[in-house]
Each structure stands twice: as structure tokens, then as C-alpha cells.
Length: 153
Image 1: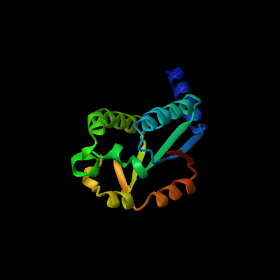
Image 2: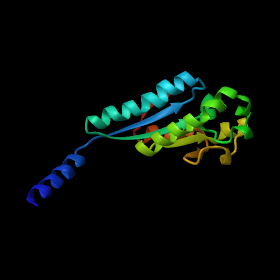
Image 3: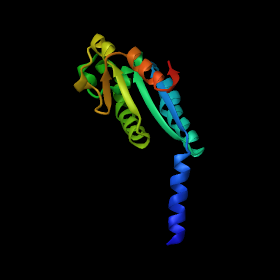
Image 4: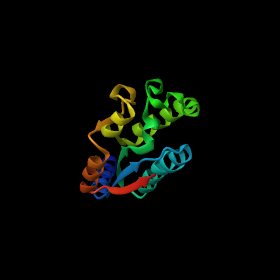
């Protein structure tokens, strides 16, 4: 019983000294290769690296530019409905996004200004994505909260 108590105290103490790494990803790429490698591979890899060092990691992703298409659930309601390659890859993209969002508790935000310009409605995007007024406002908000800026163009 005493050993358990000591272990619990050690865990609580070590967690209280853990540093929090904060990252905001400026996601604008429309390239499947860049999205897969730099975002779906790079972001979890970065989180895992810092977590292995004993750090907590918080990640926010601001989606705009050509990256909208990776977060649209109802492609047929948007201009992306004609992209056969995207439609073929959509299920695996959605599965991977949902996995990393759940595992790492990533905050996904999408620029409403661009959504409106592209005819994307809130009901067309994945439920774990939150529309925000603009990408610029989101990026300023996160950076002013101490998040390191990482572009994924």
C-alpha cells in the first residue's frame, strides 16, 4: 500500500513539472503528398517526440487555403465532389483525422470566410472541425496564447 502511495505521489509531482508544448498548425496545403507526409505524419510524430520527453502537447490546426477539401464530409455538396481521387481517398483521410483528433485531442478550426467563398456549409464539414471567423484571427489568437507557428503549405 505504501509503495502505491509513493508511486502516485511521484506521478503527480512529475506531471506538475512537465512542460507544455503548444503548436498551431497553419494548414493550407491542397497537395495529398504534403498533407499525408507533413500533416498526418509530421504532426503526430512531433507530438509523440515531445510526449516521450515528458512534455504535455497541445495542438490547434487552422484550416484554410487549399486544405478545405480534406475536411469536407459531404464532398457532393461542394466543388470537391468532382475530384475522383479525393473521393476515393476520403474514407481513409477521415479515419486518420478522427484517430489523431481523438488520440491527441487536436483542436481543428476552419476559416468561415474561405468556406463561404468556396460554398462550403458548416453541415458539409466533419463534426470535429469548428468554423471560425477567419484564419488570420485564429492564427493571431493561438500565437498570442503562446503557440508555436508551424506552416504546412
